[in-house]
Image (cartoon, rainbow, N blue to C red; front, side, top):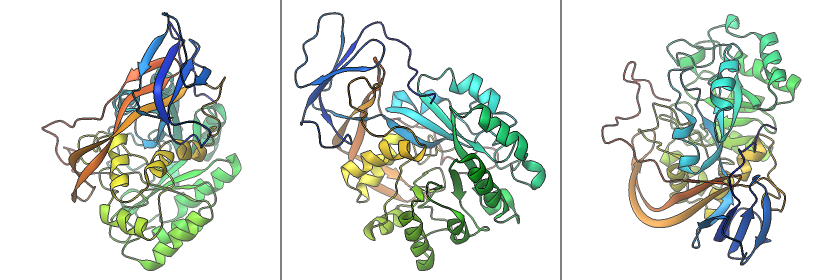
Length: 405
């Protein structure tokens, strides 16, 4: 795979006094981790002695987890009208790996790879949009007007040429995108997924197609993003039959992904689902330039919201680290073993009050916050902190058309 090609550091790195979480139960309450200058774990112990030519990160009891992995972002900056730069949602926010969710289609993926994926310090992967143009003019020019929008041969060729970074297919299945085309794009994406042996990520929103029908088409390993949206006709809170279908889908291995976004996450829906035992498998942000300063902000704040709604601390960490890695078929076991590439997030869980809102504008007071301190990429330690929205930010809507995602 493409990941973990971190630039060599000038010196080794020692992480001192960190509390490991989401690595299993093999480790004690506090550990040191020594990373060699080539970015691989050299030693794990309780008190590792090192010389002067080692950069030291004092964790001081902060948590050490596998690197935070955001399964749904939009970072084809300059190639679409909604995308942000990877730096705006990556290492500086504690995120070491991210997956762009369909910003590029086959017609423009080469530019995305050359100008964004390859220069990024983080690991950037992609779900390739089944629509050839991707999200060039998002929701102003649909990528799924009719069959002329999809070139099956070119899509297959693009994936085969980029299997190191393309981890699946993306299809947006809601009325504002597909009009009356209903389930056909999802069926085509599933067909391609079977041919290419890749998962499909499906955006669910305003029907048609119905969320119910989409779930019936998905199989183990496929991903439903925006699983806790509060949209009329697409909310599992308002429809017990749909809720049971979501439960059944999760039981057969369909990944329920948060995909917060500017219009796709409801506190009420998420809280009701968690109280009934239906938790998301993965936590992601759907960050783009219409949600960054609106309701989402960053990965840490999204994780804090799920914690406040009743998810257990370690479940939140797992859903933000190893679970998304499994969803895109990256190694998820043995990430804290000698010889493995070092990819970690150092963070605290702090008691502090913060008023936040969901995609419907409903506010909530958080009492505990995930606070990233460092993103560890090989022997490089990048200082991190939560995003502070602009004081002049609006509600995340496009200033031109008012659309939110």
